[in-house]
Amino acid sequence: MTNNNIYFIANWKMFGSVKLVNSLNNVISYSKKNKHKAKIVYCPPYTLLKSFVDKTKNSNIEIGAQDCHINSDYGPYTGAISSKMIKDLGAKFVIIGHSETRKENDNKKINLKIKSALNKKLNVIFCIGEKLIDKKKNKTKFVLKKQLLEGLKNLNKLNKVIIAYEPVWSIGTGIVPTENNLIKNVKFIKDTLKRSKKFSMSKVLYGGSVNQKNIKNLMRIDNIDGFLIGGASTNEKIFIDIMKKSII
Ligand code: PGA
Image 1 (cartoon, rainbow, N blue to C red):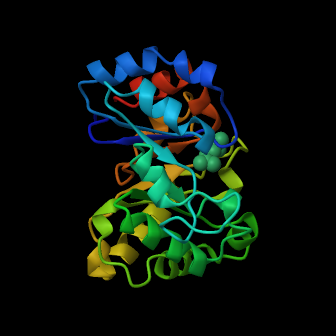
Image 2 (image 1 turned 180 degrees about the vertical axis):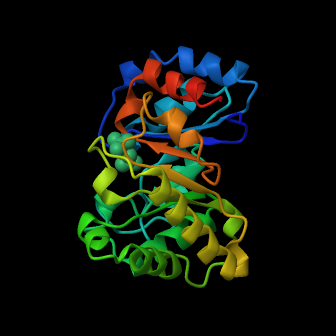
């Protein structure tokens, strides 16, 4: 398998500086000569979106935000950022429903945010995933199905929605699900999407403690369409290493 058309989405969370963005020369040259056409997307904090867009202008790297407001336009919401504003900066993606933001976002609000992003023609990286307690109580499928169906309720244009399966217990812990577990849950997500015909083509990524050591094993799971990578993506050398090692 190559990493053809595989997504490598870097979720920088609350990390990074203008100086660091300006030093990212190797990943830019990698994106240009990457003949396997890995799809690279950087999702930095809002404060670095413009620096990233400028820095990656002549490369094959796309930029995304990490969240957006439910209102797609301007409005009286202090501290908030809308999809219109994200789009205006030249970003093309937005992460919605990440578990680190789910305390303030129920499925209904996530659904409104996805609608607002699609309204402005942004690509959505829609995160779902069970908590450890759900897994222990054998409720993983129930949780995933609920998050998917409620998050995608009344949506049609789903070619712009990518699902990121991120078990909450694997984020930032160094623990990745077993191969069997991952195959089973990704298949469940894809089957659930297929049953609702509108979403049958959606890509499903995996996220949670992906690094340069486990990428080869993860790449062997062939129903995964890419990776959402947190910590390991903030180090340019490691991020490139992950992409290189994903060609197996
Ligand atoms: P991690 O984060 O790779 O640091 O576990 C992934 C994510 O939260 O998207």
